[in-house]
Length: 563
Image 1 (cartoon, rainbow, N blue to C red):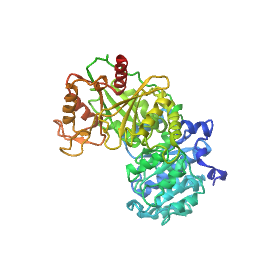
Image 2 (cartoon, rainbow, N blue to C red):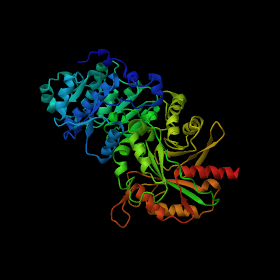
Image 3 (tube, helix red, strand yellow):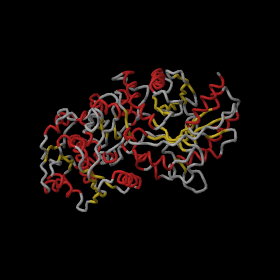
Image 4 (tube, rainbow, N blue to C red):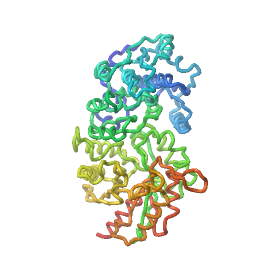
């Protein structure tokens, strides 16, 4: 058993940063928890059943939590056979030389081992029907209690195994509610991270336990709004809920950001050691922009949904329509990704992307987490909350030499959004362009451009997408959602028109990450990067495709030439 009982009652908002210089400085530079490098890594194969996965996730979280509180110790890697995760594990082990053990005894042998070591004190029982019942949140209450109580989450199907290895029951979460769970915690939860998970989702519970995060859901009785009010402004909501719009809107108003990550795995291990600003990055030199030609048209293609951490870590690199496309390098392209989150949770991916990037590949930061710029801090924090957030993000953007930023808005040209752009210009002096997306429709601005100024007097452009490659159904093309053929025709019409001033020469087109288009000779629907290549092939010669950074530089050069 633990000899230092205080470890279970100290406010984890502070102990999350025990291995940094101080709580204040660490909170100012990262929002995902940091972990010391493990002294051994146990690799567990896919557990198969939901109940075994939940038990394994919460066990992995307990070990990671112990390391945060007491220093380097063992951690668990949950191997689910994903090729992207296999790559990150290989890079992690190569960099740190951590001893790796493929444990042949399986889950309950490890539970017994760490129970005897005093790390696993017992189990918290949840309802076995929770996986298929969205109204039964007992697994979320159990997940929330695991860290502070030192238990793993177990349902009735695993209870006999838990007893066999000597675990006592620490709490019974069946039939309970959020208020019961909160009372059991006695304030022993972090105020910097909040977990949002549907009960049928086993993944990410390792991070929730390791962080000491409340695990909630955006449904009646799920505790989400109450939990938001308990968090510190500037924190994150990791996972995913039931209603995208409502969960993001509420988080935004409480000055929090959502990081879509409910299918992510092994974040504690990948976050261990030197991550975030402590990791050494070597960003590639930007590809120089072509010389500006008055009257010519310049266009960028940018993939959407770069706020999605789980997609970035667990599929982006191996998808033949994305980074693994055999056509990659055919056109300049903007790859939106949660780069700042990756710096803290999986910096190996950034290293890998930089090493394999084509000169025409540009990595972009998609938002600063998923929130609506014009809603941020409305309920709590006000404009000061956004200012504080931007100052926190500034060193990350500088470290990666990022000069273009995508943001989400509720209404792109609302007074609150305009104030948000002004705040970006004031606090992020190296940002040359903000690419502003409205929640619905994404291309609401139809290519409109607004100008703001840094404190130095340098201009910063806010550019809305001219259109989006988005499949909303056959024949559903309009000004906002277009198939590649229709988009190419509309862009050629734009290029053939008489320029209405220099700003009309510049545009960007978003590509909806989840849309597929039944085009091409292969018979396989194309999407994402391949859809952009298809569209670019059908553009006239007066349109030059450039990277988003080049687009920003050319636009500013054109403005300067007119002054």
